[in-house]
Image (cartoon, rainbow, N blue to C red; front, side):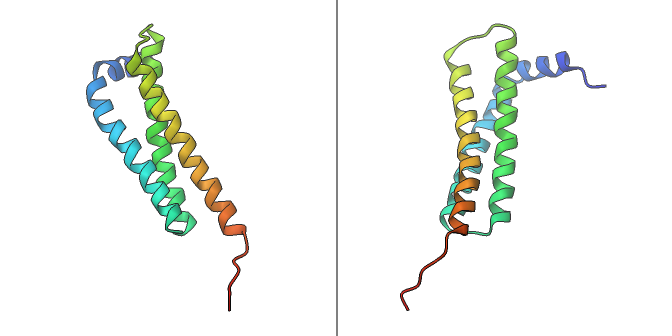
Length: 110
């Protein structure tokens, strides 16, 4: 069975390694989502990349909450939380933007 206390302790004990992976992963997947939307790629590509990015961002939020649980309230915790929430909002916003953009009729000049 999954012991959440052990998982939270693991998260705090390996904070540098976890953040060293999650920060670039969040930034890269969110950037890739925006690029795919800007290049008008098919929606399943955008959904895949945004889904992976949202998983990374959600894991970062949970990682930050493990620090909040023990009372660590410092600038890095808020910065990481802000980064994760921003990536979540951008990924979901990109999906919504692409959905609305694809539904609008395209006008041709010919």
